[in-house]
Image (cartoon, rainbow, N blue to C red; front, side):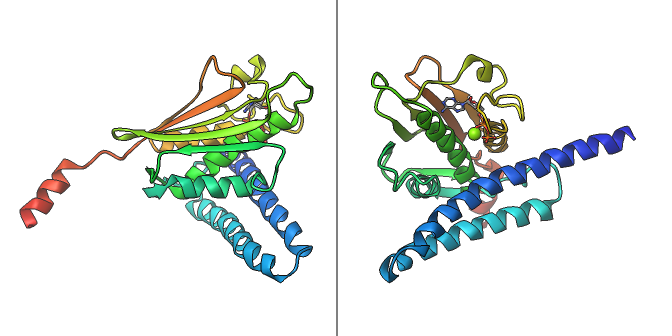
Length: 242
Ligand SMILES: Nc1ncnc2c1ncn2[C@@H]1O[C@H](COP(=O)(O)OP(=O)(O)OP(=O)(O)O)[C@@H](O)[C@H]1O
Ligand SMILES: [Mg+2]
């Protein structure tokens, strides 16, 4: 019974996670299709492929989780990913490309490549960017800084470093205590407290790290993703073959 109980708990967590990110993904499809409905042909041409891409992503995500059939995520399928492109897709999916109220600054090293699963990287950044946008939306008053989200990316040797910052109120103390734990960190009405837990799980599956940077204006989350270690023996055997 105990075994069954823990399996059910694991399954419950898995279902919640699927539901969570599916909601994020479908929300972005909805944003695009809303626009599609009200515009003439040339713009349909522009939006339709993006809508398709978003839906494809949602479907592939469900499929891989279901066919992997475990409570954990499928292991990352890593390759060298062009970060600027992923960041652009995240911006569109969060509805921020057409949102003039929130400033967007992307300071990614030109041509930056990261050794990561592109779909995982997308989900990590979408969760962070959504949190940032939600923090900024809740803000009113004349004395607050102009709402802005900033993404930076750079490489230090074999490690890529990405930061997502906003000019919002910063992470409240009661959220800080369990920030990356499922269901524990939320201090937002309507929040489930899963976004950062999912982001952290995906980052760690890449042997990377995610942390809240202390002492900044607003909130800054830093992700470090090391390249996969080079397998020396496979290089040697390749040389031997050559
Ligand atoms: N950029 C941010 N600025 C201020 N607070 C933040 C920021 N990011 C996260 N938080 C705080 O951390 C909490 C946990 O975030 P998390 O993304 O895990 O859950 P959530 O956003 O509440 O719910 P959801 O599961 O829908 O993402 C949030 O409720 C919020 O209080
Ligand atoms: Mg969130």
